[in-house]
Length: 99
Image 1 (cartoon, helix red, strand yellow):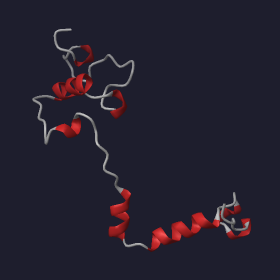
Image 2 (tube, helix red, strand yellow; image 1 turned 120 degrees about the horizontal axis):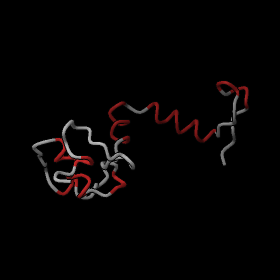
Image 3 (spheres, rainbow, N blue to C red; image 1 turned 45 degrees about the vertical axis):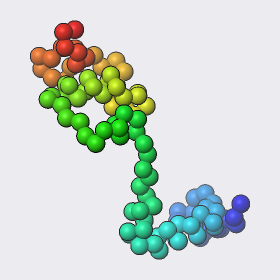
Image 4 (cartoon, rainbow, N blue to C red; image 1 turned 180 degrees about the vertical axis):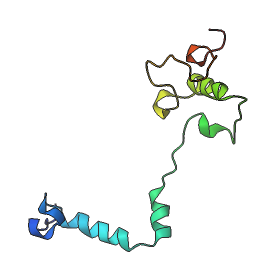
């Protein structure tokens, strides 16, 4: 592990920050904004969502239903657990038509 800076050399004098981390931070801060933007976004494949160039839906309820039926839970596009109340006045509970 890199040598930490003494407590008095750190803002607030809290925990010791390894010198290597501070050097990496300084190097990153010296990069151009364009370079920092390029390094900050990581392209991640999202199953189903990235398999078509676009999708369109007639209503938000249709979109939500499609998400619930087609996307894996870990993507976070489903309803939170325990929310059976429809956000659309007059729509069936859970967004399911005919339910």
